[in-house]
Picture (cartoon, rainbow over the protein chains, first blue to last red):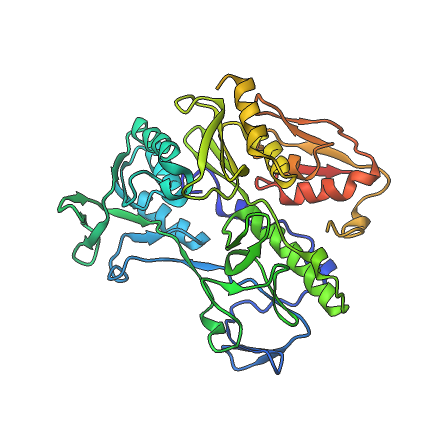
Length: 358
Length: 77
């Protein structure tokens, strides 16, 4: 949509299931509170909704740069309205774009804007894009990809402030330099939408804290960007923001809630241990990641080479494979994702690397 | 869970898988759900292995169609 290739209507969810599901929508109403004892959700129009079971799926909101709220031309990217606003700014003649943050959102925005011929500067305080997630070597590959497409990539430097008189004019960086801009897109992560749950008694810590089965309290489950739970497969309490995860965790949480309602006691059968997976399209590259790499993991190339258009790498620690990443090798990631779920070992990965001659 | 009988009324005794290859981006979501039917090969193209999958695969094929991020899979029958 950002490139103008898709019309908004094309992003609509597939229709035709509502009537079968017998759902009541309460659109344009905000949940403002939860009372676990009374089993009610309070709404901003004063009503209270009683529940037998509750699924919390309130998502997350993008972090903003403080002090930029009233400055025109500064955007975050989360909703359909956000895309429309950025699109409108480009259509209105914006030509100099600064992208704050070289994470997946920032990198995709940078790529979309370059493909439309806009000047793009991408600013990232880390030494390489995504280096905390993917390591510096793969991060450098992503930085080089953007440089090759004409992005001015500024690494290891933060943003000091965004300046302008009512409308953005330039971005001041921590090294004292400034970058002229008429459009700024800020992609510096999200904050889970848990404000309405303050004081409810639910444990909140960068999300709604659930048990290993996605249950947050008796009769209450959480799913998607807002939910944090211990994923035993990775020995880590995680919150996952991926598209596929939102679907997958929602279905798991629904099953879990139904089992709770039926008084099922064998909760071990409901342990939620997915291998997270997502992709990111940047220029002609499809980057896919399955698993959960740690910042100090070892990394080994298992197909192709880092300076190829196609390659695949594995991350691991303590003889365990934690993640597999590929560029333009989607099928390989799907197969490795399955292998990760089946307990793929580091020595198996090294054998694959040797077999491919990497 | 694939919700058996979820969309049962929409299909009779056959199912035919149709992929719009102009939309398909080979993200391989479908392959993760129903590898018996969908395969993204090393050339990065999606191949439909069974255009008329047997009924025991229908739930997963429907799931794959519903979860396709590009809505490139339609089911006829």
